Length: 181
Image 1 (cartoon, rainbow, N blue to C red):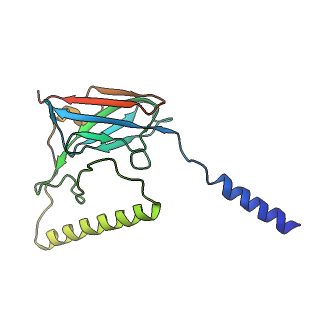
Image 2: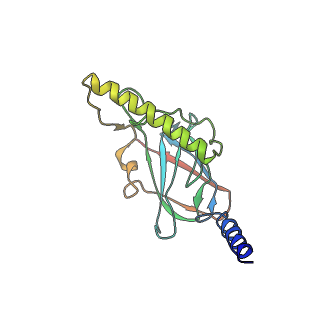
Image 3: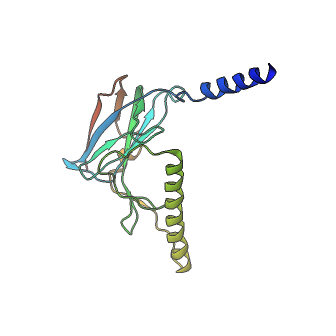
């Protein structure tokens, strides 16, 4: 009898642990342009006004300036609530968008990956970046600081002037029009 109780308890604990974790997210898509021209490889970051109940979300633009936000899983969106937004586009002297390794801008939101696939992709990206850094260090190179190609005011939620309210539906669409001056 005790074995049945223990087995049932373990089964209930496993089933209870298999539910959704974290707050519900809602699809958020948008576009970024600078003086009317789509911005490719920009990083769009949403910072919640209420950090206690919200979570930051991020997306990267494709060649058309389009992005889909991610909070925990690729393209899952953002938690409902008010956000301040910042937009950056950091490029290293060799043309890469990320000084820790380059990945092509997405042509469309990425597919959902299993945890194993995510771990493998992270390991590969880290290994590629580590190999590049090691090669550069052996050659005596010093890493040049990444340069933001967008106006500095957009690199901070304090100065960007961009705000967005994520609604509790999957119709959240934002158009971000940046200006050089």
